[in-house]
Length: 240
Image (cartoon, rainbow, N blue to C red):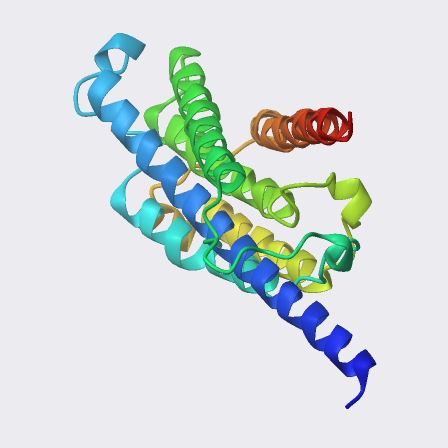
């Protein structure tokens, strides 16, 4: 009987749908990146100068990324605050799925970028004369950091993170903070180095990994900017 409650219910429903989309886009883009990383190394390893049988990650590292790294940020995205313009968005068609063309474009772009960056770091480290263990650890760390930055990207596929507010989801910040602690233990704790095939990285190694991973954030911001220009021109052409 209260119109305000109807408006609140619509806003809540749109927020829930949006968070389901963020959750799925994050997990699927991360998984696609891992698949493309390993597939590219297997199929094109010799062309990239990789020795036969050399892979950027071992099974336990892939398992760690899927079980220990992807889960908490994805859960944090499922409770993300709704977009500020959620009630100004057009009603969603009844039969429209989550996987709209813009979502599919971002999934493919993020997956390809993840594979390109992580494999590039692995090949570059290996060709720089570093040990195989160090190169593999660099790839492992870079992949995880890429996924952390990708989690922030997935908070909104339409707007810049700076508009959405980079620090408005405290659960995502806590999740990534906790994962950074766990990653440090896996990299530096001797008890975990052997089973996870990791190598103690230097400050320079971390700098390279962080800067390489940051590129996915820059890519996403440019992608959102270009898409906003396309939408603006489309609206202008319709108006004319």
